[in-house]
Length: 374
Picture 1 (spheres, rainbow, N blue to C red):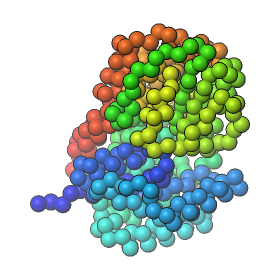
Picture 2 (cartoon, helix red, strand yellow):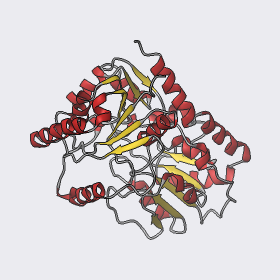
Picture 3 (cartoon, helix red, strand yellow):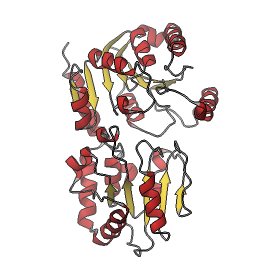
Picture 4 (cartoon, rainbow, N blue to C red):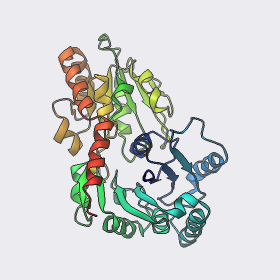
């Protein structure tokens, strides 16, 4: 009997950071019986003095074990690496990757599949060091549109696109941007663990007592801070809950609650208290290529959803999301969707999420891998 095909997942985020596609796919491969190595390789953009607390926190995290148990069949590698933004960092990481593979018998023996999420030079060094049969680049965002990237990142991503037998992207805009250089580029949207987000309907509150919720990064590059603050100040009787790690500091009005980063399975405990869910993004070159990873999760709650008119959301979700423009329009639309919501509309949102579960996405990925030549 053949041994199960081993998978190496190279992640640009830590395992215990916000739960995203990286951890989801790794968990699904492990649940399907594939031994999975999840290797954390954070650090793509250039660092400044403001990053000192984040660096200290990362070094401290490397010294302590993960608080929650890992899925069966999955192991975690957390090598000490530097941001690959200088010649010294690149050289140090190259040595670290060679040593990692030399010491780790599982990686040294080779894997069937490398599923890579990092466009960094360090990821390339690890890919070149580990014998493998398949390379898939799961490009969740347009890293070339991120501020502060190293000057060699475009060349490193071009190498990935040319080497990977399959490049996955979640949005049409990203597919248009990456297809010209990729060997094969396929749009595979995010999914949802629908059962984690199922919520009972919430009785409609008074118009002056709405609770709005956003969960995810609190980062100025993609989140519309001015919009959220404007809503909070215009409606002091409303409550706005922001659930997620604070990447960009901001002084919020008193009716804005910062809940901090929460385990993915605990997000529903915050959502049950919300009347409307928000996807309040700024529009820039980076976000135009984004499909928010939480889209189907929000739909699975059955709650009304207000969103910025990102191209991917407008293309696929116009029947289920509302796209106001301007602070006053967001306020008026929030009141309107709560008043006009019906059991049929809630069920329609939930059904769309159920059709786009992560199990369905993983089946699509398995079909794509099975269809690769060779």
